[in-house]
Length: 66
Image 1 (cartoon, one colour):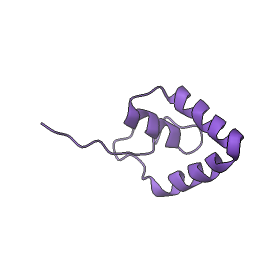
Image 2 (image 1 turned 90 degrees about the vertical axis):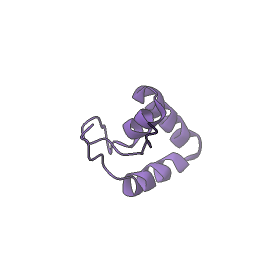
Image 3 (image 1 turned 45 degrees about the vertical axis):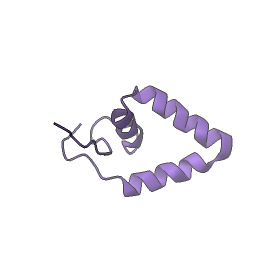
Image 4 (image 1 turned 90 degrees about the horizontal axis):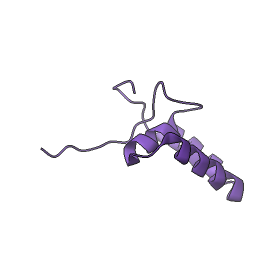
């Protein structure tokens, strides 16, 4: 059976908006690695903050409650 994996923001495992946990779950990574990467992305160029805000708006919350 072929299941399609979708990207969702987390409802409960979040620090700010659940974006990093959603990406980590989608890519089967540890959420801490994604969060540190996002912080580095923000610190090195500043575009990470804008990208996070856009993702927070565009990516829907999980209907499953993870």
